[in-house]
Length: 173
Image (cartoon, rainbow, N blue to C red):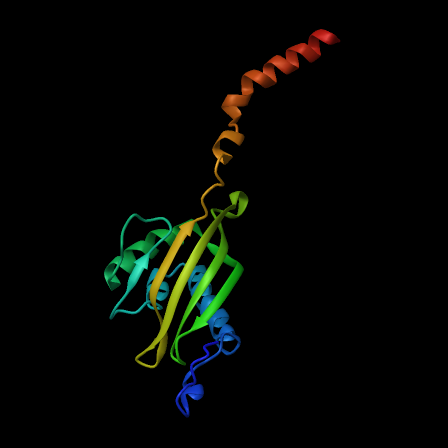
C-alpha cells in the first residue's frame, strides 16, 4: 500500500487482489476447460487478437497473432494437457486487467501413460471488447535445481551397477 494519498474516488477504480482472485480462478478454469475440449480454436479465442504477447512452454516462438496462436494450440491439445495451479498470485491493474502468476502442473499424454510437467506461468488478462482476454501469457518448464542433472542417473547408466550387484549377490549364495 502506498503512503501517497489517492485522489477522491480513486479507491473505486482499484480492485484488490482478494477481489480479483475469484475472477483469475474462473478465467484459468475457462482456459483449462477449453484445453479439455481439444478444440484449439476455442482455446485460441481466449487470447486477444489486438495486442497479444505469447511465449508458450513448448515452442521457441514469440507469438503475437491469431493464426500462430491457433497453430500452437492445434499441436498442444494433442498432448491432452490438464493443468492444476499449485501456487499463484493475482495483481490487479484497475478493474479491467490483472496479472496472474504462479506455478502449475500439467498432466500430459494418454490415460495409460500420463506424465507431469511442472511449469511457471504469467497471464495478463484484460477486458477487450467486453470480454476477458489473455493479452500476455508466458509459460516455462521449471528448471532443475543446480546439480540435479548429476544426481539423476539413467537406467542405462545404472544397468552395469545393477548387473554387478546381482552377480555379487548371486555369487554369495
